[in-house]
Length: 337
Image (cartoon, rainbow, N blue to C red; front, top):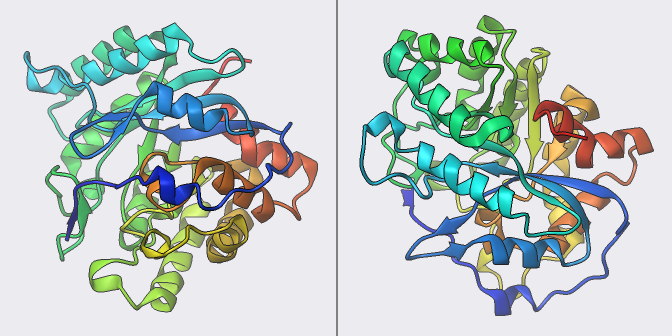
């Protein structure tokens, strides 16, 4: 099963409207993507429209999405086009109250020869300047072929000597690593985090507990395996967790197939076991909420999602809420005050 697109249905999403909760609370959206593809278009005007829906978004983190790659030149430098694309958007501003693309995370294939990795990282830094904060790897692999997009899957990538030689370059550049793998690979990520304690690792989408393909109908079993992996990973102090990404086809909560989109209460109820487990394991100071738009927009709207997050955090202290909604992201991505 390969997911190739995320259909967005504005009319369907508009069927559920809610008053915005706690509208003054500062939020760093960590992260979102921008896409211009035959199957989906989500660019700066679309992001700004979502950001203007009532919540106080003060900054965003741009996460690589294979967008605006260079069409010519050395293969290992083509992804620099995406850093240039996000930097142009950041330079243009676009919002009077928010720093859009305040941090940029791009893609570099760290399994390439070290000198190639070094050249690519230097090129991204030159293109993004101080906004270029890190690299996202694509380590997601499953024997079933379950995945997203067209990138080839590599078994055991996080454990390979070639990948780790390139990974070692990140700390030298003061860069972080956004980790994208499945819940079945959390042990491999833990091994990587232990081997490189000086490198900040940010786990995407709650560690990606799967609910599609061969994992459909096995949610309780998947949750137990996922929870064990999360608890082991949390023992590594250099690792932080993004709370979100559950609106996608791979997570398969089923919201996108309903007659009506979910309310914030329904989203919060479905996500509570995952979010509570992560906050208990990592602490609020190492967790951050994310919209993961536009992928998650197939299942719920921006204002309803952030309402759900505020309900998920309703029992947290003010210090913990500050961390979950803005503080952790600002610290981990080294955002300017």
